[in-house]
Amino acid sequence: MHGHSMARKKISTTIYITPEQSEQLKQLNAKTRVPVAEYIRQGIDLMLEKERHNLPGQLTLHVPSGR
Image (cartoon, rainbow, N blue to C red):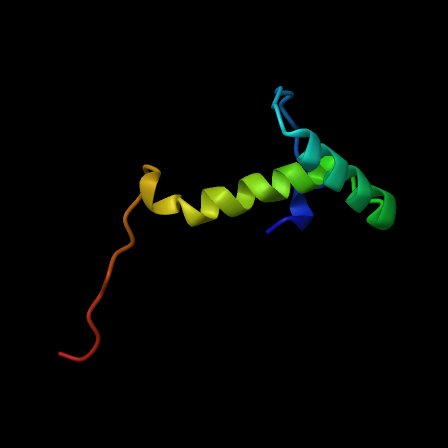
């Protein structure tokens, strides 16, 4: 889910996080060398997946098995 994000065009936005969130993200970045922005994108992906039922979209077609 997350591996393809580096090749895609990104849109700049501003977010506000707590000092604690900022500090923990910086520590994570120092240890893993994964950019803080990538962790934020992954967090957004997790929330969008969790809340997918609240987003508009195509309904899946359920075909009953066995007649």
